[in-house]
Length: 420
Image (tube, rainbow, N blue to C red; front, side, top):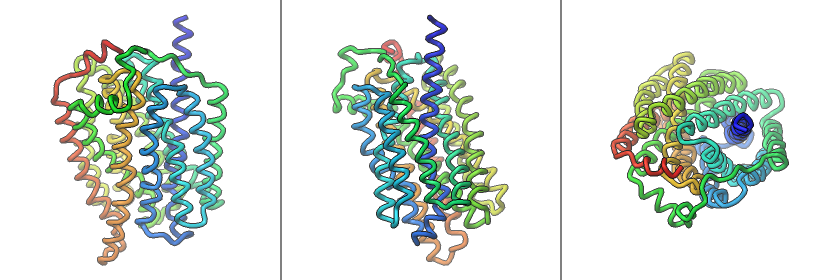
């Protein structure tokens, strides 16, 4: 029976990781297609920033909280299946858009349909893995983002080069559609680990419990600055390499995707394992490790956009991006340790609301708007690279300071670990 439970638990982890891979593919595919969309629909950098960020994120985070609230009280596997199926349809609609507003509408629809996937997946992991193994398990699923970013950037760049950006959207839209139908047919929701009155919180009580913890306010605010820097680099670096350094879509997507995919995957799993071991002595290591990594990544982000050779830029970006993105699992794991099991999806959704608004909502638009401004002031050739320089490194310094402050508060997770 123990062997059977081991196989079922890890099999479920593999399925959830695949779901995150496809989620990332459809979410990030537009990044490598920005230059094609700009030329075809005659858009500005600010409009591209809205498409790649705010159009998706606005409704992604708006729908995320109610969807997570539902996930904590319903069949999470079916919720994921329906969400993936809808994602496939919305991605295909992106390929059918004939103007800016139609593409914005399709991206908004994609944001709504994608919103339940990650909170529901994290809630399932919290029910099938004990706290001592949870950060490692979350690191494995988080690695799906890196695999998905590699596949999305490389695959879409390759398809768009030969067949155009519209066909690329149609092709990747098939992936969540098929996976969603498979999840509805075969994926089963595991039993929740606790169903007592302490865990049956209403919406207002849930939000009050999350926001009322001192650590949460500090480390979520700090991490939002780090997500801002990461989203700015991930969104605009492919366009920068194509626009300023003469790379093709396939070259830029494959290179940046491979760096983020392979490097981020390895470092994320290593950080998860190390955090699990150190957190056995003090759970605040789940915050201290991200604070250290955010601080260490800041100089590499600055060097990346002070460089004017492709090799130096890509090398420094690789170090900074991998360190930033490896921090998500410890932060989510720590958050789940200080809340009851039946609000775990809400915890993830609440944190991701802040992360996505500050990061993937604001960062692409802020960089695009600043790039347009710098171009009008006579720095057109370097406008995008300078915008990235001015906005990324300072954000990482602020992130490190705020998360470190959050880690200075007492370890409030002991009682929660006893509940879990």
